[in-house]
Image (tube, rainbow, N blue to C red; front, side):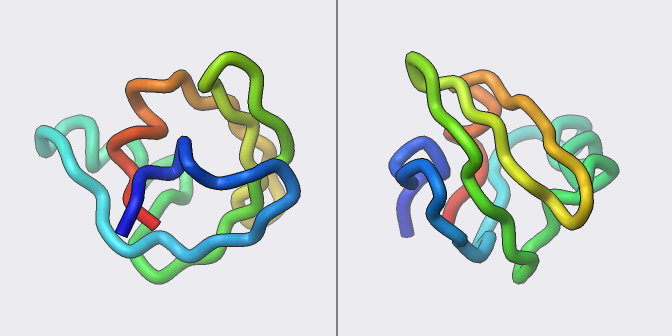
Amino acid sequence: MMPLTMAKSGERVTIKKITGKDEIRQHLAELGFVVDSDITVVSEIAGNLIVQVKDSRIALDKSMANRIMI
């Protein structure tokens, strides 16, 4: 398992675990980041990511992306 920040641009990955406090995990779940779902890394700039979740593109800062394990 590794954090989402380690994924390369264009790579499709599956979420294995989400770490952090309950409020943070709930917020990410509301955005579509749930365990066993597939997401695609669209681009990465200085550790900040843009990811494709279902039909939406979402920007994540480095600290949030580090909480999502793939």
